[in-house]
Image (tube, rainbow, N blue to C red):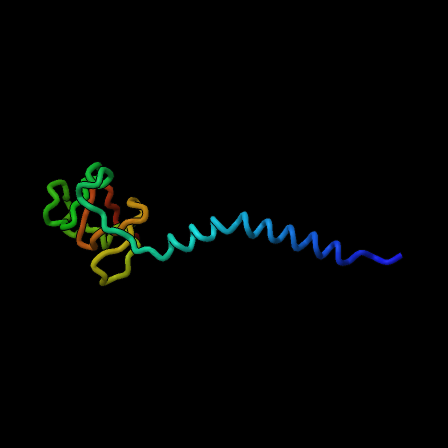
Length: 109
């Protein structure tokens, strides 16, 4: 008896096509989100207000350590020398390197 290889190929093609069509919306969402630039955190943002975030650390009334600012915080992941960078506390938004908030924690050496 002869094997029906074309049937297996057809079934495989139909399965892969169905999987591809089901995954297409997710791939589009991932690609379009990665291409967009991050917005800066506003001091009036509800989360920023709750954390006492200020874009200029020298204007923070509650700051006790004069050297404390976003650029040397454990939550800040921006590159050294850049004006702003991402913060783990403000998902998807940028904070100024010279900013400060009450959640500041010294970056380990």
